[in-house]
Length: 383
Image 1 (cartoon, helix red, strand yellow):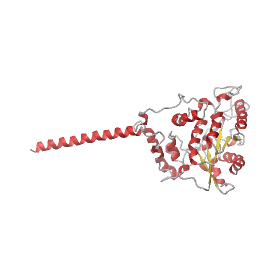
Image 2 (cartoon, helix red, strand yellow):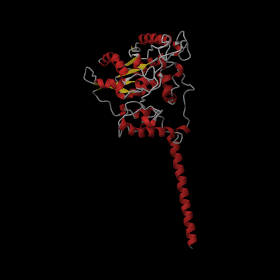
Image 3 (cartoon, helix red, strand yellow):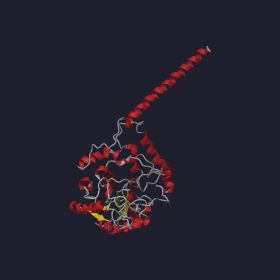
Image 4 (spheres, helix red, strand yellow):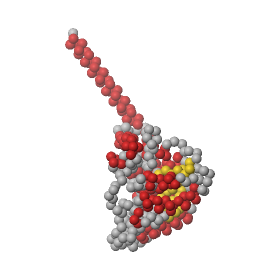
């Protein structure tokens, strides 16, 4: 009798376990494929502890050395913005909001947040003629691509900017590099409409775009993006405690000052005429159009001007003189023709005030840069 009862109980337990497993698997499959139906860049990216339990970051998240910098690179623009201080709430009525776009020079490689262009603007405590406080937000991102800046610009417009400052340099202009930067390549659903609606000279069907399959959008396929978003929350605790969001190296390899005498190439082009039709000047004009009534100040950012060996051939590692000089003239011509608000500050920072790159500056160099920009900034603030 006991054996029969025991067998019956074992059968019931096995049946219960089997039913639980089957139902659990069905629920997981439903959840797995339901996640794929949630629109890309939707609610999943917006869930964040930043600006709730954690302060918002002063820069968009970027980094490879996560354990030392308490930061990481990811491709979800919603998650990136959710972690930023600009997402803290509604814009104050007494705030004149300035947004900075750009590359690693504006983001602030090797600079503390207070030493970046946005940090210096905020420390200066500028105000408008009607008493509004000028507040700058650093929304630059450390890769060189104008269409990357345009994608971020479109996102920033929802945050009601009063002025946009867009530092650029020649390295960000070649058409063939625009989509290759991972942040752009992994966001075709954001960039392709911009290419088509603004009639950009880029291929909206470029092979550089990384398209997600339906499986990629499921819970299993989406696991890396979810893991990255969770990591960003985890590192936010350490970042909030330390303020460290990048690795501040004490020993760096200085930017190159000496060059080979026959090294006069830029990208795949060599001494001669810079092919302006292969530069994305139209992206700047498209950005101005996209911003509408919000003024954009385009800044040709400072570069290292070498005084080293064969510096008569190259200004720096990036630029031979012939190419950069032609770019400068083209920028001035386009600014006039397209009526951009434009300032060229390429030579305001001394050679000694550059760090590990021909566009990365020291805190002193950043201060010099800001002082050169300030008169134009004040004019735009006062209308």
